[in-house]
Structure formats: structure tokens, C-alpha cells
Length: 267
Image (cartoon, rainbow, N blue to C red; front, side, top):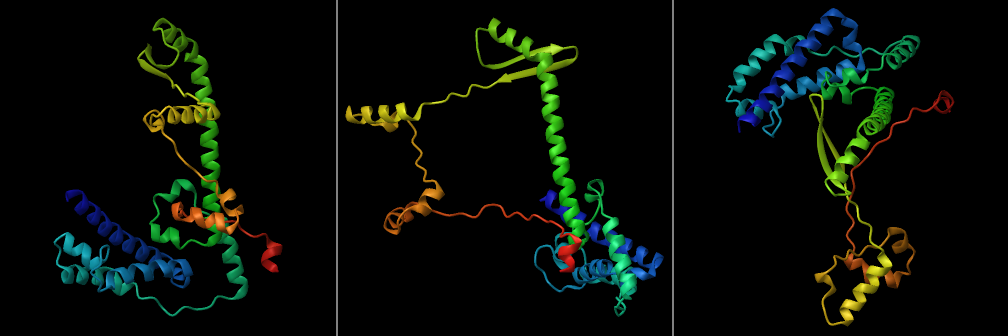
């Protein structure tokens, strides 16, 4: 329960911090009040504080969990922040200025190092181009980290593989874990055993055990699978016989962002 209270306390602190940050930015650069992303951040924050909802995650809900008087808290936030964050009427920008601003936003892409310091609401309101750029940065970082890790594993293997093999032989085993010291560092070398079974021979043994009057399931675990490509290629009468044994579950949704080139956009 204490962990949950700490969580909602952090949510409230972040919302108040975001309000102060937006108000400070707006006072320093008045033109931001006409910026689409800035207005979205302000509108989102105001809506959260002004909402009358008591659903989990709402301002009223957080106040109730933290045993805070909602009316009193709202009054202070209204006085310090919200009354100074009323959005002025939006003014369309001249075409040239809008074009220049779009180019500037594209150039000012946030970096991965800045990602965790930005509120998720602010991140969700980034331009599609900026989100695509972040996704590309993340993909490159993952690939780079993967290659670096593989290279480092090769270096470590070169240093310790012979020593680990020797210790296994001395222990009379071909696989498993051995531990030894290298200075003040303990090295744990693992060589897992991964048996491979000949499926044709196992199938023959399964039939022989069953014909001998014994239950082959006492000796083997059998997992039946139907490749989806084969299932779709079957005639309907065969598919219908199998459909009762088939359950389709959704996987994890993914989104890949790619920016069109200038010619595609112009078209």
C-alpha cells in the first residue's frame, strides 16, 4: 500500500512540476502560446486538474488516495498556475513562418538521452517525424549495443575459455558451470547441455511402446503443432475438423514509423 501511495504522490508532484515548467516557458517565450505542441501540453494538463472524474489516475482520485483536501489543493493550483495558463485564441501563422518552423522542429529532434526526462504526455505530442526519428535512434542503439555485447563476449571467451575447459576436464564433466578467480573478480563459466532428439526415431519408439501395451506418454512429452501456412492451404472440410482445436490470440502490437521523402509528400 505504501508503494502505491508513493506512486500517486510522484504523479501529483510531476503534474505540479509540469505546470510550473510550462508556465515559466510561456512567460519567457510568449510566442509559445501559439505553438501547437505547447498548447497541447497546456490543454492536457489543465484538463487533468479540472476534471471532475474520480476514476483511477484522475486528480480527484490522487487527492483521495493521498488524503488531501481536493478543493483546497485545487484552489492553490488554480491560483498559482491555472489562472495564468488560459489559452489565448490560436492565430494562424503566415505560410513562410510556418514552413520555417516546421523545418526547425525537424532539425530539433530530441535525443535518446533526453527521452526519460520528458513527460510521457509531451512525448506523445511530438510530431510524427520526431517520433520516427526517436524510433530510428532506438533501433540503431539496440543494434549497436548488440554488436558491442557480441564483440565483448568474444573477447571474454578468448581470455577464459581454455581455463574453463581445463577445469571441466579436471572435474570429469563435458558441460556445466565452473567458477574461478581472476584477481579480485570471480568468473562463472557456463556451458549448457542442449540435447537434440531425432524426431523420426522418437516417433518409431513411440509406436513401439504403444504396441507393447505401455503408455508412451509415461516416457515422452508430445506437443502437437500445425503450421499456419499449412492450415490455410487445407481444403475447407479438413480445416473445419481442426478449427475446434485452434485458438488465435493477438500478439503484441507494434508500430513502425517511416518518414516519406519530399517527392512523396509533394504528391
